[in-house]
Image (cartoon, rainbow, N blue to C red; front, top):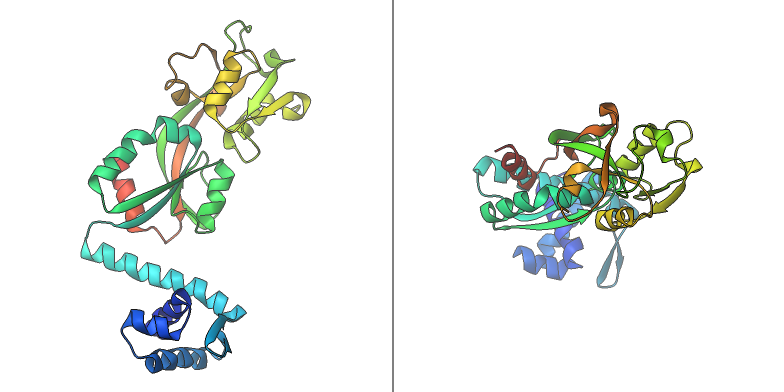
Length: 283
């Protein structure tokens, strides 16, 4: 299997046909057709179904396309790293909402100044959703709440965080799980790692024994707590970004409270833009 054949194959798919691909590659159409036939012969499969002047990817072609894209991307990454050039292109980055609000503004501003040719696409979500998107190659990297269990991912520890329980200012002190009996819990939807921390702190009864209100925003969660709707578990760094919010802070045991935010990416596939982000964070 020739690497150039894979590049031609991907171009035919991207351009939607032989003639447009030939124009893009500055080749004659017969040369592109020959390359595709050579690739099919070398693999012993049919990559396209031919319908008059149109080509349709076969199921085998769909499978090869995913590998071709990965190999071409790795080639581009290797060339960029070896040449020592400035990173460019798109960085598809994921982050928890808490990290986005409390940790990333300065970092992303510095990144934009240093690497103006990189277009940043930021996606927020729960821990589990972000991990899945990195594994599925929908994100290049993500700031999550837990070290990933998936062997397909690598990580580096980035930000220390301290989780606290917050309540309405008139709520009695909360020192243990039973002190919240009768209160409503305000949490992110399933897939949130901090929600799992709260579950472990509550013990055997867990969330099932309490009223639960699910929200998708820390500003909404903190506002509801301040109004007396319920209690919540939040990173203290997020609360520090809301100095005018009046809530009580309650400590939980260090075993649950102290966590570290990791940056995760696919094992063996770290791209130059992610390397640049790592270097910026470490500086």
